[in-house]
Length: 186
Image (tube, rainbow, N blue to C red; front, side, top):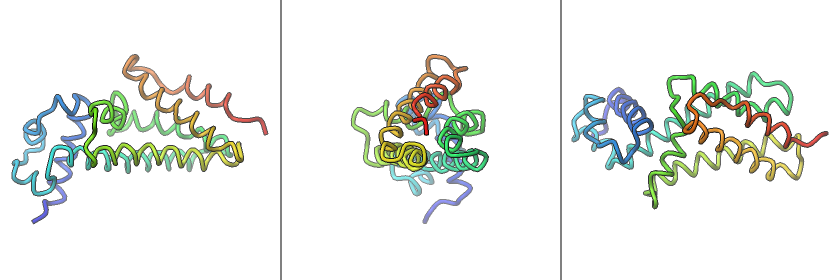
């Protein structure tokens, strides 16, 4: 018997809050269960392991991130504005209810020397989505060089997210300025 949608939401809310602020290894399943007000038997009906719960929380977070980025793209003007909208989305996502002190995907990747397949797949999906979207958005500006520009922007995005650990107030301004210097003159 699957778990109720409302129970699943409570579990994922608790998992996101605890895993992505305190750390996955530092957060026992019991803490997630207590925060969600759910029994272990109920959780394990929906998620066969802690790692499956992490992967589900990452998948939900990925969907929320893409929706935020889509909203930033909708507001952007021109090809350059659309490419740089990733930075608007990063700032907007951070200030929203899903925001955290840094990237949940980077944090999850850092916590596992050899990530379980569910978690590794979730992290890879996020990276691949960033790369693919940035490449598509770079084509009008960089043509055949779009994949290289996308890799450079992916590095800036990732570095900007990681800087939040060093400086919790860090925004994306420096990364955005660096990104504009990478865009070829057309």
